Amino acid sequence: MSHTPHELRDEFPDAQDILHHLKTTNAHFAALAERYHVVNREIHRIEAEVEPSSDARTEDLKKQRLLLIDEISQWVETAKAA
Image (cartoon, rainbow, N blue to C red; front, top):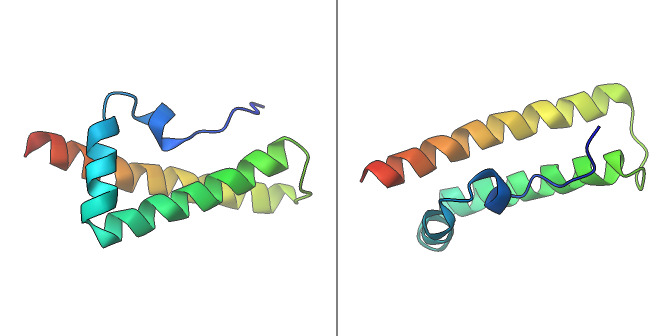
C-alpha cells in the first residue's frame, strides 16, 4: 500500500500546461479535476490511517479514482492532438 498521493501533476508530468489550460478554460474539466482531487485526498487520508474506512468504501473510492483518471486522460489526449 502506497501512502503517496496520486496528484494529477504526478499522473501527467508531461501535460502540466494542458492541465492548467483545461482547468482555467473548461468548467466541466475543472469540476472533473476537483472531483479527482477530493476522491484522491480521501484515499490518501485512509491509506495514511488518518481517517478510518471500511475495505468496501476504500475500494469504491479507488474505482472512482480510476474512472476519473481515465476521463481526465481522454481530455488530455484530445487536447494534445488539437
